[in-house]
Image (cartoon, rainbow over all chains, first blue to last red; front, side):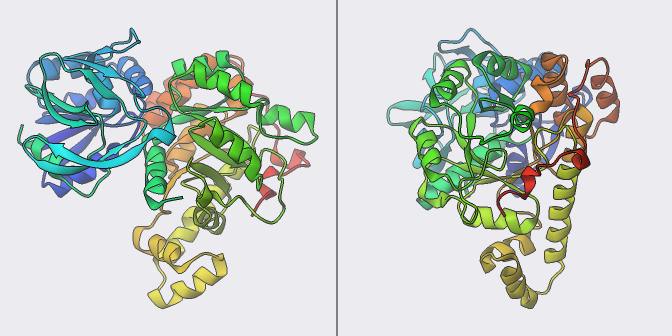
Length: 184
Length: 291
């Protein structure tokens, strides 16, 4: 299994390490020619969604990424990646990739002092560690399925081939979420 | 500071990797930086080049000015306090800054001790010009390191020297036998565990950015190819002819730092770079502050 990791900015190397740990192959997508290769799944990592969204446009990657997702390629967005996937962002008119019918709230837990670590149930996996760094949450899941909640807020959801997580599975010891993604 | 908080603070730095952190002095500049693709901004009253020109004692910025920048952008906001000035750091923590830079750009408040950063919940980034300085700052609680470079000069030579020095010392420790690590810890004045980490992992245990003297996309790429995980650009942007264009070009260059064809295109028509001063033309070496 070969997974492309969007490597424009942020914590992409951490995802690559997890994928290799799970026995998958990982490569970095930094420009147009990278995404023209053949691969089986896409990861949109954590970082700053404003930066990654802007670079997706400027490096001519927005359209091919969107097409891949609409064609049914499995995609996992973590933190900033969740915001990129969301069709709506609360109190913000920006739409980045916008292929998943959810509403994301940016910086939903405040500034860095609001960042936290916890454990919670993830549907289909069980209890897993979750790290939230200046994280968003999903304010409205619409037709997507809720996979995890923390304090009554949706922090993981799936809509067919799209998986959106408010936390960072690439930062904790468990590889369970990456294994889940590889089976999608 | 609890262990969990320190881990979260190191992890915020991980999210900034591959990005460009820009110095800004007003909410308007902060918005320009965010629109150009900055992954964070450093809020300060005067950029290093102006601090250098003005002389005198340079202090933490007015919290009101920092709050204005926090309100203007959605990306993380950093701010500087003086070396050893834990009261300034307490103020920055009280206004919930995302990262404190205990910085040699400002006048040091303590000529012997840095801030005990373990006592704080907000993260700290500190400058270093060699591995010993980096590990000492980490031991004090810094969750991110940057080269010192020579701020406000537009001259990259010092940042290069500091990054190469750190890399060479890391390689030296990697090749040591385990028996030699104990003495190395003594030489560097840091705990054995930190030296052991470098020996086993071939890197420092926190994210390492380049800073001090970056003025062009090529400067940023130079630092990335030397192993920096991201770049701070201080005076280089808003002291140049076309800040928007230059900022956006540096962001793109950092993302594709191995594509020289793209770098060539990005380097075209950027207008005037900051004038800059060569290191042998300056009398104040900020990098010598705080060891």
